[in-house]
Amino acid sequence: MSLWRKAYLITLTLVDVYSSLIYVHVLSALTFMLTHGVTASAILFVRNETNAERIRLLLQIARNRTIVGVTNTSITVLLLTGITLGFLGGWWGRMWIWTALGIAVAITFAMAFLGRLYFERLRKVVGLPYVEGRKKHGLFP
Image 1 (cartoon, rainbow, N blue to C red):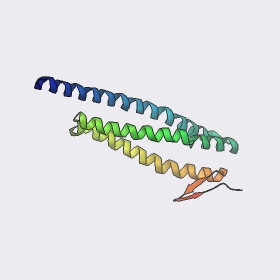
Image 2: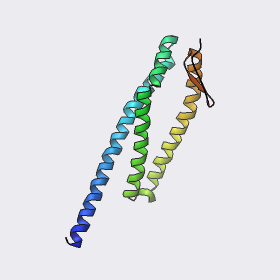
Image 3: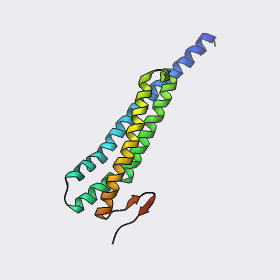
Image 4: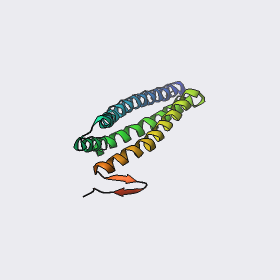
C-alpha cells in the first residue's frame, strides 16, 4: 500500500471519528434538553402550586433517579465530546470555545448552588427527604 493511500485512509478515519463525535455531541445536547425540561417543568409548576401533596409530587418528579441519571450522563457526554472535538478540530485557539465552556461551567455551578438552597428548604417544609449541608435527612413523621 502506498504512502498516499495510507495517509488518505488515516484522514478518512479521522473525519469519520470527528463526524461521529459531532453526532454524539448533538444527540447528548438534545437528550439533556429533553430530560432537563422534565425537571424544569416540574420546578416551574411548584412555584404556582399551593397544595402540599401536589408540591411533594412535583418535587419527587424533579428528583426522579432515572431522569436525573440520564440528565447527568447526557451533560457529561456533552462536555466530554465537546472537549474532544475541540482537540480534534483544533478549536482551542479560538475564543468561542473558551466562552462556551466558561458559560456552561458558570451556569452549572449557579444552578447547583442557588437552586439547591431553595428546593432543599421546600423539600424540608413539605416533609420530603432533604439535604442540609452535607447531611441527609429522612422523612418527618
